[in-house]
Amino acid sequence: CGRAIFIDTEGTFNAPKMVKIAEAHSLEADVALANIDYCRVYNYEDLLLTILDASALLISGTHSFIVIDSIIVPFRNDFLDHGELSDRQQELQRTLTALQRIIDEYNIACLITNQVIANPENGGMP
Image 1 (cartoon, one colour):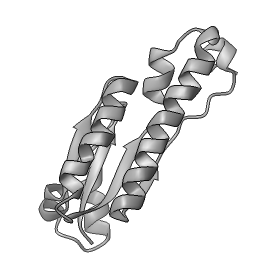
Image 2 (spheres, rainbow, N blue to C red; image 1 turned 90 degrees about the vertical axis):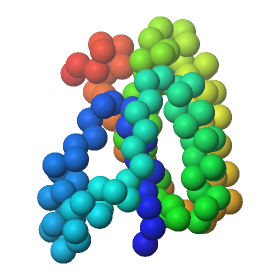
Image 3 (cartoon, rainbow, N blue to C red; image 1 turned 45 degrees about the vertical axis):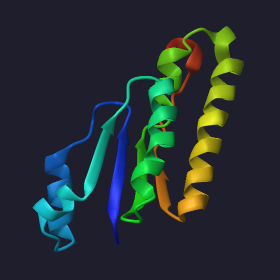
């Protein structure tokens, strides 16, 4: 299996939930938690730097999985104006390209969550 890197953009990582998941799969909860390297990021620049810095952990060969929860949050928070949509998309593409390179280079799995909003013009409200 291997260790996991969990990149949290929302501050919603829930260790007790991870314990329940581990126990549901007959894993030792403390061992499962000890195999998660947790990174909290606050903006899109932090996210990109964290992805690039992940290489330092991945080079050892002990990690096999990256989770990013949620990919879009830092971009939505940093690019609030509708006129910045093009900039947001470019930075998102740059981040995803860096992530893809790392996934390919180290042959690891990656899980990305995303938020979907009903109406971006209305702050996500229907």
